[in-house]
Image (tube, rainbow, N blue to C red; front, top):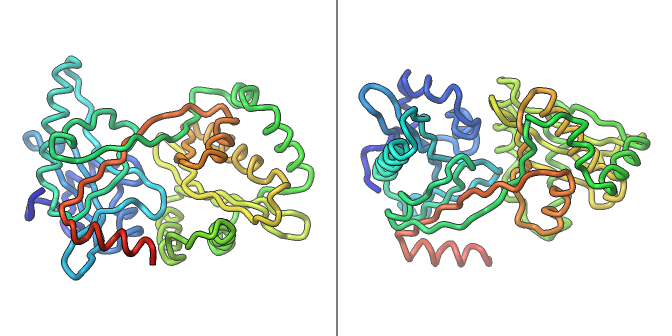
Amino acid sequence: MKNGKQLLNNNLSPELIKFLEDVCIFFQPWWLEAVSPGQWGYSVAKRGDDIAGVLPFTYKTRLGKYRLQDLPLVFSYQGPWIKNGTAKYSRNMSEEKQIMAELINKLPDFAVFNLWLHPNVTNWLPFYWNNFMQTTRYTYIIDASKNIDEIWNGTRANIRTDIRKAQNILRIVEEEDVTRFFELEQKTFQHQGIQMPFAVEMLVRIDSECSKREARKILLADDEKGRAHAGVYLVWDNTTVYSILRGSDPQLRNSGANSLLVWKAIEYAISMNKNFDFCGSWNEPIERFILAFGARQVPFFEITRTSSKLVKVYRMVRKYI
């Protein structure tokens, strides 16, 4: 990875802005600015005058000089995103590998580089050839091609029972203020004994940018006393609704609110003719809950490379203090 070739946030060309119009929401410059203010950019590969692919990155600095591209604090995929070819399969594969190699070569130096590739990226070999390591992760997707009755019939009986039960005691509210949702997130992590991985300021920035573009919805399940049992935070792009955050009140967890909220989110995605992405989980009970809606398991890759042993030790120490 070499210095001086990355496209930083203060130099977005008209060609790049045009290229990004139909690209995943998590690749957009306004999203990168919301999650990592002032510390993001793009590696760009061109063929002639046309952009052939981009690889966005965010970073933070540790120990005064080491740049880290780390996993997102709020679920989001990253690059690369490569323009679809029209040639034969073997020719397209060869071109894709060349573009990916160029994007990797144009990245700035990182002491640690760690990101989740979009599920559309099914070939990570160019990263392997550049000394990256890979871990396979999974997300779960409901396809827009299915109709809502088909999805309902494919949902397990216990989930349908929870949804019906919750409909009798709860109402779904479209919340405009992100504060109530953040409070549910805090309760969720506190119950697990885990520190909140992101500050409310980050969520407020994301919410502000998505709201401006009419690309988000906050759904809460309230009871007759006005108590929020659970909530879900949705964002979307041209093809997919992403359930990036879900939270609930541990003291009110038996109401079926989570099942009802997920069902309403799926209904919303299908009504817009978009896929619904649960945004993965490595937690077995949550994975079991997601599969109960008939979602399709889809692999994606986590890519890692560590260049600094000092920073690696620093991160391990920070994890336990």
